[in-house]
Length: 239
Image (cartoon, rainbow, N blue to C red; front, top):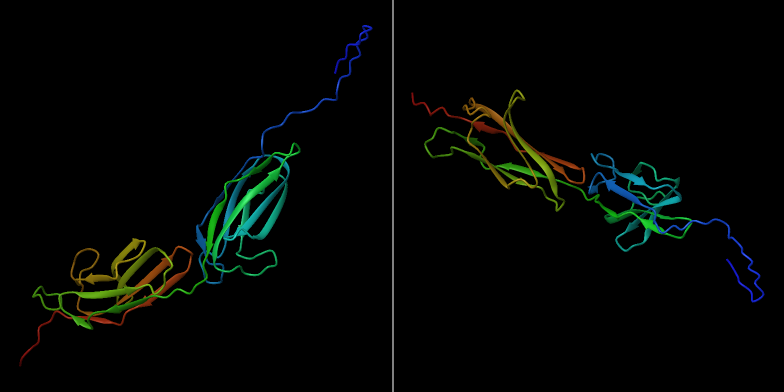
C-alpha cells in the first residue's frame, strides 16, 4: 500500500505474502459392482470403492440413501484411501434396507474451495432367489420319426432380480456332463434337447438329469434340477 500526502510524504507498507487459490479439491471414485447382496452365501457380499484424490487437510466419504439421508461417513487425512470396502451396514453396524445408495468424496481446502467426486451408485438387494427346472417328458426317443424326438426343459427364475449368466447341463448316471448350454442375461424359458452330445453325436440310451444354475447380478446363486429323463431309441420287441 502506498500513500502520497500533499507535503510530499509517501509512506509505503507491504502486506505479508498470501496465496490466491481458486482450484477446488479433486477426486474420483469407481465401484466394482452395481449391485450386491450383503449376506452369507452371496458371491458378492460387499463392494469396493477405488479412490483417487488431491492432497487436502481432510477428505470425507459420504454414503447416502435414495432420499439423500446420510447413512455412513469415513474420513481421511490428506488423501482419500485408495480402497474402501462397504459391507452393507450403516454407521451403527446395522444392515441397511434394500434399495439404491450413492457414495462420493467431499473436501474443502484452506481457501474455502469445495470439491466433490462424481457420485457412484450401488444397489443393495437381499431378496431371496429361487429357480425351477422341469422336463416335458419322462422318456423320449430321438430316432427322427417325428414322435418324441426332443425333450424340452422349462426354466423359471422365480424372482425379478436380474441374471448375470446361466448354465444348463445334462449329465448321465455316471455324473458325466454330455450336453451344456450357457449364456448371459436371462435364459430362455424353454431349451430343447435332441439327445445329442456337445460333439454332435447321439447320446447312448439311458437315464439323464438336467441341472440349472443362475448367477444373479447381485451375487446370489440359484440352482435347480429336473427329474431323470430316459433316452430310449430301441423299438419294442415282439416275440
